[in-house]
Image 1 (cartoon, rainbow, N blue to C red):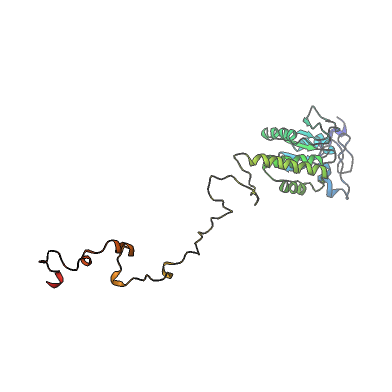
Image 2 (image 1 turned 60 degrees about the horizontal axis):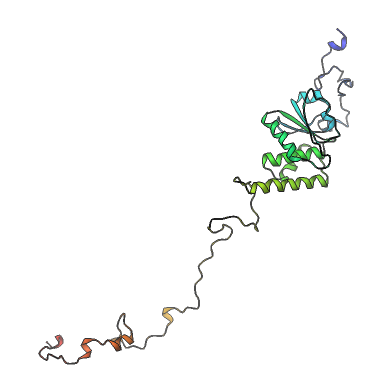
Length: 271
């Protein structure tokens, strides 16, 4: 057995090289970082974990380090750049986006959704890990988690500070956001987004919450019954339920005939 085979393998890449002494691995190129590189070793050597134990974001350099990917349990790779070669087809399951200008978010999301259902760890990468692959990851967060662009982008940026989307890619994300939440507005499950003031929500005849029922309006032009002028009727001529016109047409029997026709009967007052 050769001396090199008796040495302990590197704890990072798993190959036999003198990591502590600064020897570069002849298989994967792994080496101890210089003092200036120690702050960025996590970004350069390892892909960034976006969702725990599932979704990883990186560059083509990350995708070319098969041993490092295996140590993280990654078994599937989403390549967002057609010009990048899929180096380890026998070791990983690859899915490649074919359009080098427009990102097919729906195509990528179908692959990522299948990976999540299979509980498989997947790496999404482009050439530098700053533009195309972060956009695909952000689109997946919007579709699968129901997050808006304003939530998804900071989530990815915080975990991978080197993310730098160009204007064209960001515009594609804005259009995809409108597509997702526009379709969800018409479904039974409404996303947790409050409608704008100008929106016209459907209702079943009930008053809108934003438009409370106005208080009843009273007719100020009508005068009160207490403000009317008193009737020009003497107290002994006032009769409930009858008007002055009715009095003239239907006189009381007691006042119609001052004397009784029978003559023998006297009024009760004189009895």
